[in-house]
Length: 236
Image (tube, rainbow, N blue to C red):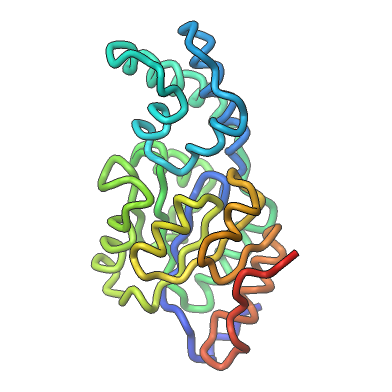
């Protein structure tokens, strides 16, 4: 798929997790809503609950349920975690993602994760899906500032000794793409996750793709220096 003898445009490809690698966005929405029902709190609609995916759990639940009294916040976190952990084993990778990651790794690219998950949650998911050996580094929301703060990308740059101009961020939310923008890192949006396509296409992402196959084709054509000019926000 990817040719190892061509000069790479990027050295490090950073992936969001929920909604980009793992098909978990609908489950996260349902667990937020169920946690609110458990506590007789105002239940966010699908649009609001989806909009907070990608943030750390503290930021996401506060935004999804802005009327909650501070004293009840720990209980909401506990109920969300209860429901999510009960369904964690049901979640699957998007079809084709494993193969794409393996191809990129074999072609010599460094791979990393920047996610709103906790370290414990990411490690559990990496282990369950047997992906931990594919990634060279990762940063989680409980280790540093939450998206769209650029800290995750800046820290991955330091950890792996890759300049920001040689990094690419791939994500399904505006939080991912604005984090990349704030760090001065190129980005690709995927529209099959949490945020509406029109919101992703309003960012400065190089392109927004609709499925993993399109993402793989874009990588094949545009990850090398001698490839054609990078696409800028495909109009559909």
